Structures are given as structure tokens and as C-alpha cells.
Length: 149
Image 1: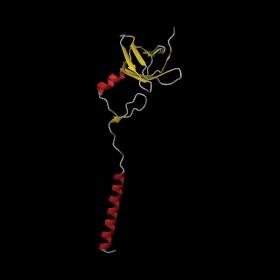
Image 2 (image 1 turned 90 degrees about the vertical axis):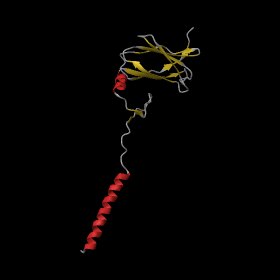
Image 3 (image 1 turned 180 degrees about the horizontal axis):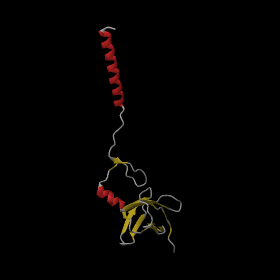
Image 4 (image 1 turned 60 degrees about the horizontal axis):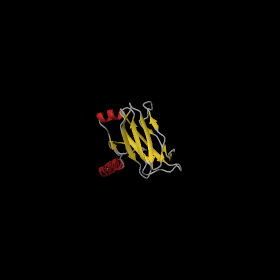
């Protein structure tokens, strides 16, 4: 083997090694984006990571959501959902959109909440989210029935 053959083989090996490295780099695994993934009823997809204070607040609070439906089991748009903190007696309201969904966030884990929905001549029964319910994201669906006379 002469020196030209040795150089040609060396160059070929070097080129194939570079090609292998480039092929591995052309399809790298994407780096983590720093966002958390929390799909579902409560949303949260693509939210940035929380700092310590936000995490502590999140640990002492919970969320409540649900769907308001009529007697035909259809979602009700425009229903007024009222949530009452039985400890402080504060009332929060939410008006449902076309999908009938309501959502409340930042609820204390140390208080009971009463919830009900009203729409025209219809109301739901009063439901309770108890301190003994340990779910961080509780779901309570409400069904509207005609007012009793």
C-alpha cells in the first residue's frame, strides 16, 4: 500500500465519521421547554413552572369545575353558578358559556363550599364541596330542574 492509498482510506474514514455525527445531530431530542403539561378539564397546558410562593399557595388551595345541564342533559348557556364559602359567607358567581362549563380557582382547602346553579325558572339542588374532599381539582356537575311551587 502506498502513501496515496493510506491518505485516501484515512480521508474516507474521517468523512464517514463526520457524516455519522451530523446524522445524529440532524434529529436531536428537543430540550425541555420549562413548561408543565396539565391537559384536561382545568386547562394549564403550556403554563410556566411556578416559583416556591406559587407552589405553596397552590398546595393550600383547590379548584372546582363542572357542567350545568338541563333536564334533557344538554349544556346550558347563561346559567348563573353561585359558590358560597360557608366559613366567610363570601359568594362568587360564574355565568356559563355555550358549553355549560363553570370553573372556580383558588378555593381554600380549609372551608366548605355550597354550590348551585340558576337559569330562568330552573335551579339545581345545592351541592357541597367539603373540607374532607381531598381532591385538588374537584368536579361537581349540576342539573337544572323546574322550581318547586
